[in-house]
Length: 140
Image (cartoon, rainbow, N blue to C red):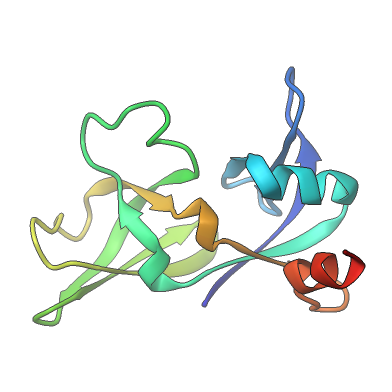
């Protein structure tokens, strides 16, 4: 799992929250259930987790809604392995890996958008390491 340290912060000028990486390399607006659940975590350190198979290459000409939960990166490695391919890139100082279908792969060194599947995000309390989803389920 890719793990990125950051915090839950208020979104400037709008209602809601976002995840902001601790090195300010990217931020991601949170909506729906995560926004509701993490609203009480404003200002607190969390770890964002996303599995490699839950990261997609953003298609060119993607709509505004499709660009939600994306980050622009320069690909360090593109490794086709038959039925899948692994992409390695950096978000700030943090290396991440995506596992994608092997069709129409961008070249190493190219800049692409990577989209995190919002329904597959995981958040952990930075201090305890506890899954915030489990935390919320136990409170219900």
